Length: 380
Image 1 (spheres, rainbow, N blue to C red):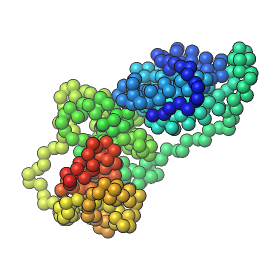
Image 2: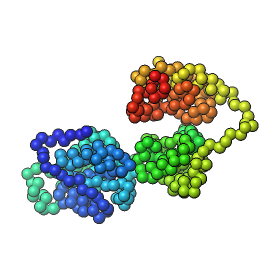
Image 3: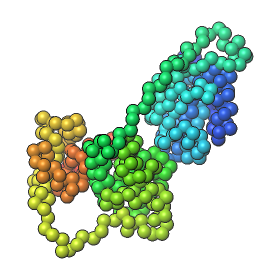
Image 4: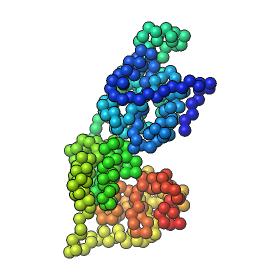
């Protein structure tokens, strides 16, 4: 936890609550009149660390005590919609740094050091006080440097699916990575917006397994899926590769009792044709070792960064494994995506013939699990 590094400073500074646009307007005016930085802290009750009593909430209180020459305010992103929407806040914790009505910087982060560093940088860009009383009271101190007048760099242009077939193919693969896939902000274990959380709760209540994709982790997919499905908001529910709807549709189906049937895989036709040869080959490879990693390259010569990091993680966790280079056999590479794990990317880890996941899943297991990875995989 961040600790104030200002010796001898005992003065407490209040973190005020923003209840709406009117209160925010008062704080902007105070910031301009007194020549003080205004820091807005957007939090949500669904995000434990930012909620009252959480680690980030305590951090903001400590920063306020250490920086009495700034104004600190908190905004409940779930309740104060007008303020949240006016700043385009899409996830919490989120911080906005202002000088009067002017936004100096914004940051979405749980990293205490990054937040403290951004606060110090923003303070140096605060415009001088506009009131005579403020100016006279600060005459003994040098004026803060004015913000640069150079225009902010323009955001990178969104990638069009028509001009980026690789992105188009990747998004299609993600929509088909499980029978039901929820594109959301955050993860099912840690939703990061007020619309994704109830969607996860309704789907989990059905007891039907579903996949998910955190759009906050991949801006290209986040914008691309909007074009791909023609829907601009999240969450988005895709079933069998087709868009079903958003959070409101999930709520409606949960209320009328059709959600489970919508997201559940349909029963297989008992007269289905024989499995393709590639499918059979993949099954044999998966069963060839207790633990097998399908990767690009080999453990000693990985040919992509994700495969290299997965090998490193497994070795650090003491997990013994066999491997198969999917670049050496296109049929296996495609078959694993379509027939078994139905996971669009590599590497893929199988244990005891069952698909576990890729690098992101393994990292979550290591970071969030109470037991070593080998025990979680049933290998110890």
